[in-house]
Amino acid sequence: MTRPPRNRFTSWAVLIAVAAGAVVATATAASADVGVIAAAADLKTVINRITNWLVGLLVALSTLLLTIGGVRYLLAGGDPGEINKAKDTLKYAALGYGVAALAPVLVQILEGFVS
Image 1 (cartoon, rainbow, N blue to C red):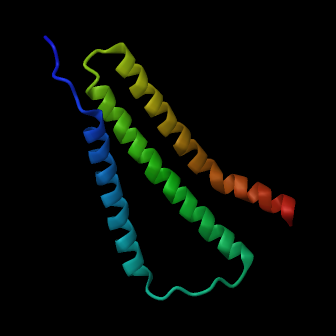
Image 2 (image 1 turned 180 degrees about the vertical axis):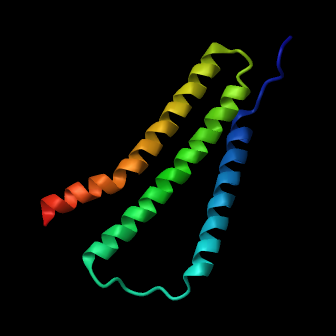
C-alpha cells in the first residue's frame, strides 16, 4: 500500500502558524495581567527577570519540540528513517528541558564569579 505524497512545506507551515498563534495568545494574556511596567531597582532583579523569561521560552520551545517529535513518531508508519528523526526530535526536547532546569543554577554560578 503506497501513501500519497506529502507536502512537507504545508505541514511545517501549519505547525509554525499554530505555535506562533499560541505564543501571541500567551503574550497577549500575560501583557494584560502586567498593567504598568516599572523600572527594576537593581541589577539582580533585572537578571532574575531575564532568567525567568529565558526559562519560559526554553520550556515553550521544548514543549513544541516534544509535540512535533510525538506527532512525527505517530505518523512515521514504520519507516525507520522517520522514526529516527522523531527520536532525535524527542532527544532535543529533553535536552531543552534540561537546559531550562539548569539555567537558574548557571546564573547563580555566574553571579558567584562576578560578585
